Image (cartoon, rainbow, N blue to C red; front, side, top):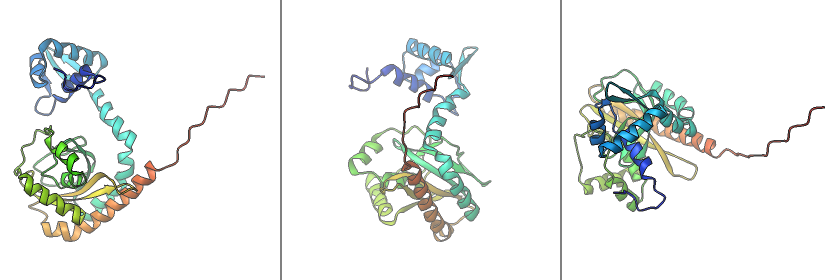
Length: 273
């Protein structure tokens, strides 16, 4: 069954991406049958897709088991490079880490999940591993609440209806009324904080990164362990620094994306004399 009625929708491409997404930390290598089950595909379809991905260099087969290859990183790094996320945010994140002594990250919204796109980490007690590309449920994170609060009512409903793909079961799952009230508070104050909603020991505060038109393009946070940093320290000491950093990142973001670009024809080559 096609998942989209649009006549231009390429179902084969969507299924190929489904195959890539079914691999993960808990399933680094799978047999053909396991891939077919994880991607909800018929076995012959999964086989053709795996053969295609293997020939393109994205999958490696060894003794009946399939693994992703490092070439898959090209897909994610193409986005990182095109958006110049690290070039724009890296210096600001390093400065914020130096001021707070805590790990700091940038994330963007992808469906009902957040995806980390930049991070500077410091050694701390951690209960969840975070790297570039890590996904967490948006509802239970300070980054996610900031990003969800920026959506209009219809877009918010559509986003929350999308199934998450993080594989994380959060500690708390608020009812919609509670979530709506929390998002109203975020819109009013301009930042969000969470205290061990996603996992035990994790607390953080986040602020929006806005472009020149005031649109939220990302969120930045300070993340701490509950055994080491109190909510008082997060809100009284780190939040003012975080808000200044979010503003500085937004200014650089707008300067980069608003830069003048002009394309001119290549001058003709002069004939040799």
